[in-house]
Length: 477
Image (cartoon, rainbow, N blue to C red):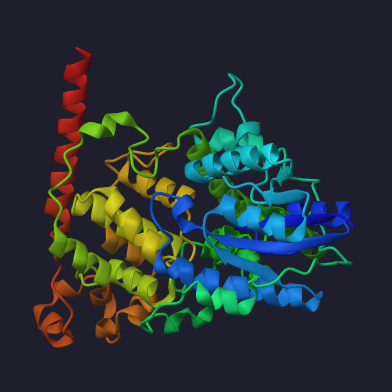
């Protein structure tokens, strides 16, 4: 009887899992394995919020496998050595896995493949995370895209008509000692202090992903284009952590939404959301082709930008949601409490840090990496560089969000601010957006005075950008 190992990574689902499906079809028995080797994956160890999600997602996968008579074999240690030990213990002849695209993981996976094939073990890999592989989407000149709109125009032509795979109906597992829920606990992924109580809003795992998608399709999809920028509403899908951990695939999401839209005779409603998923795809495209973007400016012209000296006090106030700018503080407090922040607000908090405070975007990127349940190397780097002005297809540096006018536009009643900044729950009218305009109210509220003058800091940021342009022009001449 032939035995295969399915090496689970960030594809923690049974349905539309090409590696799992291929292994089940080709072999008599399979072993579901998860190897915990975070130091092999990226320059930064997975953040605390990510570890919380991973713990619960692995538990959910273990429960799904148990329903079919199997279990998840969990081991901590170097990937190659762990797989070799499992091969020796089981007699497995093939290892199956789904590809990931972070630079260090790509190098690791190639090295593991070479070593196992030299051992005489077959290795098969598949695409389970993206609509299209990063190397399969090229410009007419044959290179990678650097601008989103033409990238999306190309990608959009290739995502219809591809159906996701169902979960295998019959499974037979090989017996291998160890693993299971006890081993998941041994990974010590959960926080030692109970700071994650607010994370109970999330339900990690394949079933939780489908629950979230169903809620989105029923309650928000029809109004997505108008509601997705309103942080007080549940107008977005909140699927990002489920997509990151591979509990659901973009193929599954698109197919389900097409089906729902057809049933409701409202197919046009899915296009704005599919475009947002396209940005996720674009982030992976950029990271694969430009692997230094998590730490270095995509646009090398920004290498000479004069960032302000690192200000530990200002950075701490920003992290704690004590900047004195209500919409920014609401976002940072939501992040700490729930592990998530509305996308519109992510742009505002990033703009304040990189432009009004002129702190380097990497500092914000690292904080998001540690606190977001959907922390994703590709999209985190792309988002921070986009706001900072140094990235691919970025917002121009001189586009500096005014957080007061932004909150008045997208949170006009202040509902989002009042929820996350209780000091301002009773603020009348415009004061919920700009409480410093009434000194007496500000004093009574206990809310901090703004840590930075928005107008003066904007002018300073524009001056720094102008100096960069002049320096660049001088170098050309």
